[in-house]
Length: 249
Image (cartoon, rainbow, N blue to C red; front, side, top):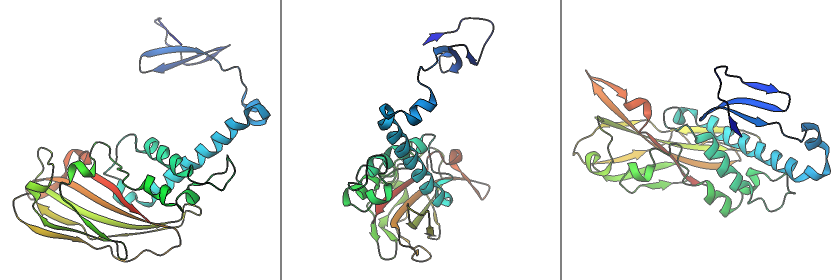
C-alpha cells in the first residue's frame, strides 16, 4: 500500500492499481491476483467459500435480531454494533457441532448452553454498558419477562451522565426463531422518574408473553433525559443509553 501525493485525487481502478480514500488520505494498492470466478469454483478455495457462507449467515442473524428489537434499539446503540454482533453470532455458530463446515447455523448453536451463554450479556451500546450504568441488582422472572429492581435510588444507583434530570426503564421479552425469522416482541410500559434521592421499587412487566417456537430473549434498557420547560429531551441523542440482552433461553 502506498500514499498518493498529487493535486489530482483519484478513486477507482487503473490497470493493476486501485486508488481509494482511507483514513490516512488517498492510497494505492495493487489488484488481487485471484479472480472472483476462481474463488467461486476452484477446489483450492473451498475453505474460503465455506468461511464466506458462514460469515454471511452470521451477519444475517445479527440483522434479524437488530430488526426484531428496533423499538428498543433505535436510541441505544453504538456505531459498531453491527460488526460486534456479527462477531458474537460467529462464536455462537461455532457451537453448532452437527452441521458440516460452511453450513453451521446460529439457531443450532443457540440450542446449546454454551451458545446461549455467548449471546447472553451482549451490550448494544458499548459506550454505555449496563453494568457500568446501573449500579443495582435486578431479578428476572423468565415465565413472564418481568424485571424487578428493589430499593432503587436514582442518584445513588446510577452512573449519571452530566445534565441528566430523568431516567426511564423498559424491559423487552422477545421470542425469535433465527431459522425462520419469526419474531414476537413484548415491551413493558416505560417507567420514567426524576433523578433524586427517592427510594422506589421498579417493576417492569411486558404486555404479554410472546408466542413462537424460537429462543426467548430478555432485554433491559436504561435511557436518560434532560427536562427543559416541562419537556424531556433525549440526552445527547441517546449516547448514554444502555441496552443489554440480559438472558437467553
